[in-house]
Amino acid sequence: MVSVPELERDRIHFFDLHQPLSMGVGHKKAYAKGGSTTLKNSVALCHRCNKLQGTDSWDVFLGKQGITVAVNGSKGVLSKLSLPELKYLASKHGLKLKATLVRGDFLSSDYHKPPSKKAYVRELAKVVSEKDAKSDLRALLNSRLR
Image (cartoon, rainbow, N blue to C red; front, side, top):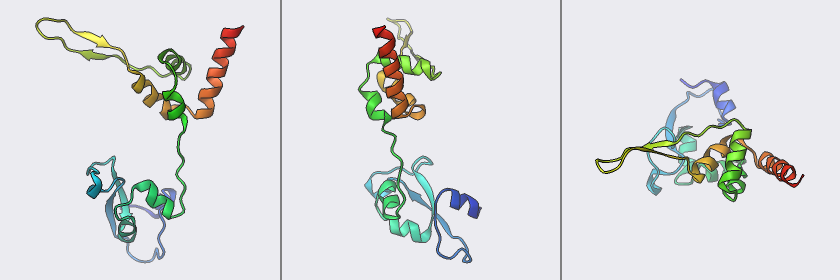
């Protein structure tokens, strides 16, 4: 059972909290538009909100409800960086990405594939803001110019 404080924390609103709560499962990306039925794509919604969402994406639905969604702009900044710069930011923020073990066949041996640029961007975007990334890179550039 979902408690009212949890609903308030998640910014889900109800017009009459004295009515019994009838919750359903909605999709962040509509099933009709190719969204999967997974926990990552699911959200608990009251019947009314589920109907209001229709086939809108989760962000569009929240926008129509007057809820602004914070967008992390760091991914765009990070994707423009070189791999050495991404590695610098990762070490500065204590991120350690592991290599992937690639199994060889009978003609080749196993080897470790280093993390890709995409993996660094994905992991750094979780912990580094756009402002922090730019600040850290300025510090790196200033240390090189001295």
